[in-house]
Image (cartoon, rainbow, N blue to C red; front, side):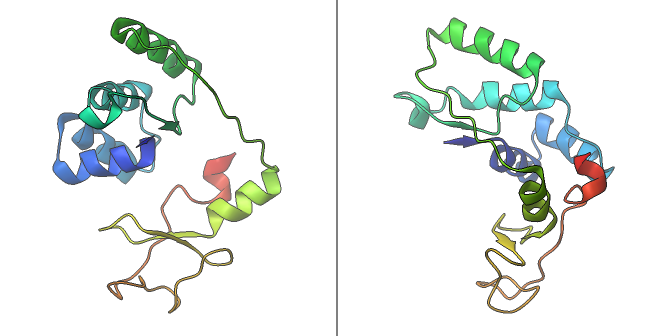
Length: 142
């Protein structure tokens, strides 16, 4: 399972080449550019745990990402077996994203309505503060 969000957080935490660039974008409230996301996915496609198949979560999101994915898979002799597309009502999507709270060190995710922590604003395991990501707001969604 290759989750774009998890891979980005891991790259940032490890201070990789792509991680440093992603952190700069995230810290300034911008979206991570296609070339960074593509690079991180490309690096991870060769992991041993992907040798018998994998699920891409949150990728591709743009036409360029889809085109580059085709190239990456072709060079590896991999074909796509299935694609899942989830259609979600915009109002529900907005509610879910705007209510998300994250424990930054671990990446654990909560939701104020759908998956609240045991103690409001605190991580269930460490008791440390949860934060709302700077891009988890209506303005950034539209």
